[in-house]
Image (cartoon, rainbow, N blue to C red; front, top):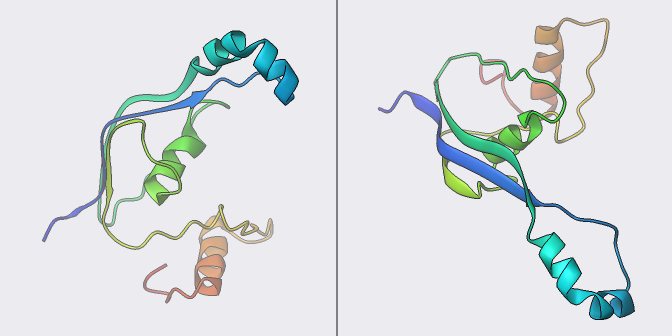
Length: 126
């Protein structure tokens, strides 16, 4: 049995840099300018290699705009890498994507247990 839960190999993710939205008339008059601007890309992730084994606990830490949410979106399967490959074995439970709140009076573990059980997981699964 493979003990790797998450495997990212050479993962890159880009998004088009979008300028102000325009109407149809402005787009038709200035189409070459808008098409050129649309081709510009912002690379949120560049060449990420990551292996997480079953049972490991991993934290994703970084400054604003570092690509943490993009990385998690790829792991959850809500977006796909522009380049590279992402393989996830097992159940995915996006607590934050579902808007699960965290109660400030509870510990991190207690918050995770409550939210996981609300999503239908057993205590063992959480």
